[in-house]
Length: 396
View (cartoon, one colour):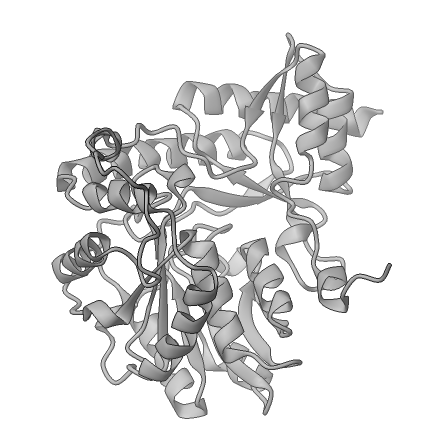
């Protein structure tokens, strides 16, 4: 039986597709240091679990399709503290930031429409654009320029009659690159001038390491029709399993379209919404401590990478990821070597091979994405394993 052309154009996740090999390695007694997935080990604030334990309703009902009022008000309060005012009807609660992205694509794309995305990019961007019938048009970047892309020279030649949006994350996954306020303004200017949507993925907003104050693209003036924000509790509160995100826009027509999809999928899980609402009351000290811990991990990761001969990487400015170029021919083959053949004292390491973060054919074959979500001592051991494995792989 034939499957759709859309699903055939979707790739497996470079972050998750090696899971069966990891399972097999663990069955052989191998300990794996996971640098492949952005799953924080920071403790989830107890407020989430306390809210679930306090649930005493006799029936676990459907939630309203746009989200429960308590959570919408909590999100509004959060943005108010960042200096942005949103109405309750401008916030749609979603099943993670992933559903917010997919909803946005379904609302704005017709078959063959294009979305401009700087590469390397979060691989699910490609999947969601493709599922909606669109095409991802990559904006080329380079590690030598710290993956910067916010320039008219890079973007304007790519815009044509089928271009519908510019999609980017700041801080970025997988590069850790953070855009300055003037760069975000430039992208907004281009979007307004060319009649494009600007989709800003801000799920790593708290994790910036240069001391910049917390901000949001929602502060931009005259962007009511163009701006779509994507947000999530997953990384902010170390609550990835809660699957709570938000699609935020002042574009009323777009929101009416997104509500149609929300009604079709009925609702987001009620208990997760209640727990997430409680998270937004966490004291700011939680973010300060978490940010400082990730800064230490960033510094440890970068220092250890620079000790490996032949490796090139930039020091990430935010989030908790970095791209690195390794002195190997193919990082997918190298990852299989790590899981199937390599071990040191019963241990090995996983990363995400770089090619899955690119749309350009052949790009990223010698790159990897590292999620520095482990404790510093575990990061040091994992990167020592990486150095040893590179030596053995290239000596075969």
